[in-house]
Length: 68
Image (cartoon, rainbow, N blue to C red):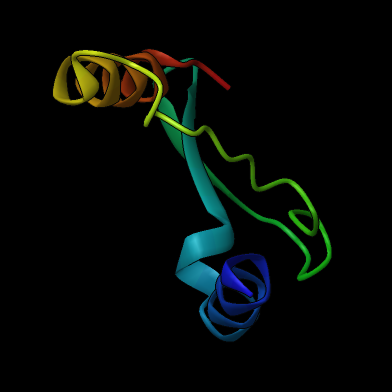
């Protein structure tokens, strides 16, 4: 259900499918198609971790630092 909700949200909002990057000294923009991110949502159950908040922070930090 969450996956479907995210798909609907991404379908409706081009900005959620847009990537900005630099090429030399120029900023470029690439808008992906509505189907580009279908079924790419991943889940992680953090209930099994003793320090859940730390695990969540670690996941968020890795996501933020991920380069496309």
